[in-house]
Length: 355
Image (cartoon, rainbow, N blue to C red; front, side, top):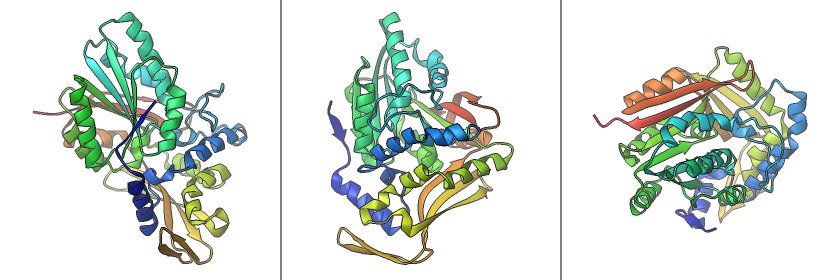
């Protein structure tokens, strides 16, 4: 199945150069080239770590489901409760008679969507008027290829788009796609906590300008716990997880930098305005490093930081306040947790406020 490209290889290389220049390996760059395969291979190998640390259920965007690096399902229990996705939109989606498009933004390997799409196919058999198509969007070509493999057997129209979802180009592309196919409703979905990698203001403004009054914005997050120590202890464990470190540093292999050159550190802080906890994972060189990429020389001096992961654990009430002030109407929200004494998860379903 064809993958449509809204970004070129040249643009992606430019993005990587900018990431090195600004010492910030952002989410778009994290899973380029072989990093996607490496991530799922490491996730497969992580079983022993979790068997020994059953109380440590990491943020589900890092655990996801247990799948192999080849993108095939693994018959193991999942830390991502996809049944929550199905329950959440059942009353809004499955009784509809309109022509609907479900757009998964930052789809990764398509695994969370699989259970949801299977449920959609089952519902379509019972409702002849229900018409739902699916679009998967990611910046990583390899992630899209894995998503194709995981979703290949599902009998639903599927389109895969390689794009920067925050770009003006993508906004125009998807609006044209919706218009050309006569969809009456669009569900823009950030599943698997993928929304935490983006600036909330950019998300709110971009999607307010992208959506029509009939469209929906749907996302889930990890909710800030009452005891901040729970969150801090959870992420401190990541420092000792060799698989986590290997995945974080993978983009730097392109410039011949490996873990032996670095020490990994975690910085956390309370964001006063949003009542969130910010976690920033950085690599610091033990000695100065000189390297070259695309005819440019980079000098990473001793103790100079490169940010490899920058995430926020938000307060659910602040999210509601923030979205309301950006003219979004909350239709549904829910909280749930997988195990005792770990983060609660929260999901939100919004429409734009046109009044």
